[in-house]
Amino acid sequence: MIEPKNIDEAMLAFQADPPVLIKDKAAHQSKYADLVQANAVILPKLNALGVVWRTWTGFLDDGKFALKYKLLHVASGTFQDGVWPLKLSDNPQQTGSQATYARRYALTIATGVAAEGDDDDGAAAAGQRYAQRANQRQQRAAAAPAAEGPAVQRTQRPQASRPPLPGESPDGKVDQKQMRHMHALWNELGYGGEENRETRLSLTARVLGLAELNSSSDLTREQADQVIAALIERRDRQRAEAGQ
Image (cartoon, rainbow, N blue to C red):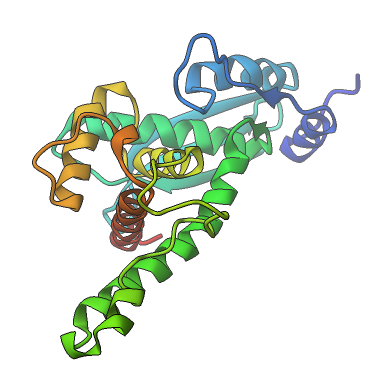
């Protein structure tokens, strides 16, 4: 094999035969391969091409907190780098969870490695549009005069995060696509992982006005749509605050 002369040649060689990141389903409950798996699959191939992967956290020139990362071709000193904004929290565990999530995603994005489960986020993004429209209809229905009677009743029920199939009801149990969408949003907000389960349930109950919630699988499709819409709003607000 011809030794790469710079970072561009190294990444060209890497992407000519890229690894595929597969989740270890026996060991992990998350739908994603974790950072340990990503490092084990990707880093040896980079190192074989003379490339090291570095990540560290710090503050940007504008004072915002971020994960910084770099692909460095050691022999030539050429590199590719970038930053991933993070929300600095008073809870170190939450900040650490965000950083771990960012490290995994930055590694796969910077190298172009496809990770099993990422395609579900594309489906989730499409579902976002349905959830937003459902939330808007719900707000319009709440503001409509009671005298409208039957017309108001028809507009009060939000659509699901995908168009309902024949025989489906918003009062039915939350489905797997909605569950995946919620999990992806929780991860994005820094509340992923089993250690944050109680926090997720508490926040979900607060969104829905429930006294308590034992499991997200107890939600109806309609409730799941409300949670998804609330999480999307929170994520977008967090991105705006981070300057993304």
